[in-house]
Image 1 (spheres, rainbow, N blue to C red):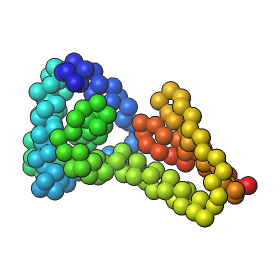
Image 2 (cartoon, rainbow, N blue to C red):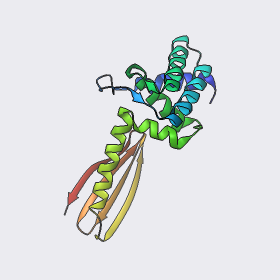
Image 3 (tube, rainbow, N blue to C red):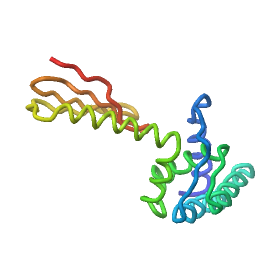
Image 4 (cartoon, helix red, strand yellow):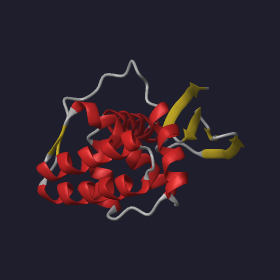
Length: 168
């Protein structure tokens, strides 16, 4: 990804942050996470052209190397990691996913995945009658119909969600 694309994409991703969303008490990083996140942030700092964004990523790189990312930089971590996973080549996907899982957005997506898995477990032992996938702008819908219920799942860039679970 070139630096102009990265700059524009980052601004777009950061603008998706919900301003009313509670920010975590910062991120404490394990030893192995520090180096990986510092490396990614330093790469973003070198790639962006906006001086304020560059300073933010340089600060993130230093904070990550120290092992604690302050609250004010957590949305930057979220936006950067979403871009890395979506458009880039992560230096260490497993470590970066673990870091993302510690963020508010990461915890929200994990909770949604648990809810989807709980709904899917409800289908155990039932006879599958139909499975359909429909695509729309930025969203896919999966419908699973059994002999006893109908489960509708929505999949988009924010994750997976149970849209409905109907008995019948």
